[in-house]
Picture (spheres, one colour):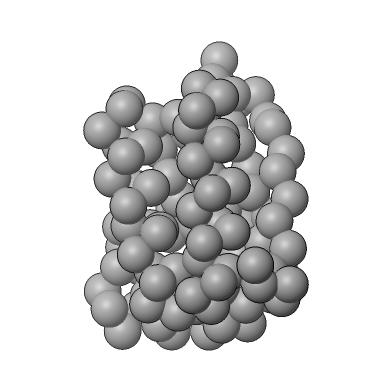
Length: 108
């Protein structure tokens, strides 16, 4: 696994829904995307449907990481939940802006 990615989870109750707030730090490389995927999988298996990813401390986002974000966004929305990014770092904002995914993934 990628030791460059730190994955911390906090839970917040908002509007009678339990939000899973994931705070990420480091680089989401191919190995880091594996860690992200398995961490989010564990949350979904635990019944979570509402996700907020804080990505202000992400230095790099690979195409594998983008795939994980899109997959979990789709899965959360299909289950009646939500999956959004808050406080994207400049590099995350640039990459997702270039791929036109920022409107879909960024929390407004």
